[in-house]
Length: 121
Image (tube, rainbow, N blue to C red; front, side):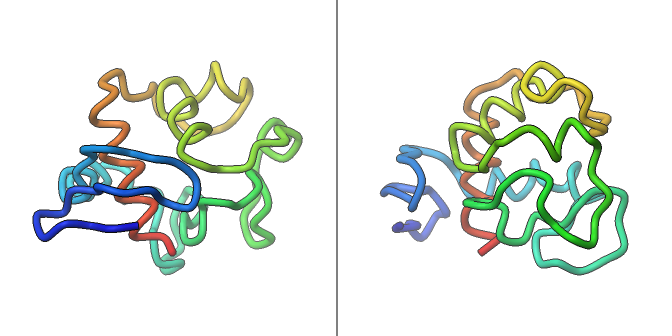
C-alpha cells in the first residue's frame, strides 16, 4: 500500500484497490464512529474495537458481546464487505445491533474504508 503525502490511497491494500480514496477525509468521517469504536483497541466503548478489523472474521473479538446475527454472519472484513456493511448495516447483516443507518455516498465509504485500512493495523 502507498499513501501519498496528502493522504490519498493510491495503490493496493492487502484486500482491495481503492483508487483516489482520501485517508484524511476518512479520518474526519470516523469521528462520528469514534463515539462507539476505537481504532487502536483502547477505551470501553459501546461498539467493538476496530483494531485489526481488515481480515478479521465478524463477531470474533472475545471481549465484546456481539449479536447472534453478527456471530453467525460468516463475514470476513475486507474492502468489499466493509463497503456493503457501511452502505446498509441491517440489509447486509440483518439483526445486528449497530444503530447506524449507513453511508449513501460511495466516495465517503471509500474514504472511511481507506482510513480503517491504514489506522487499524
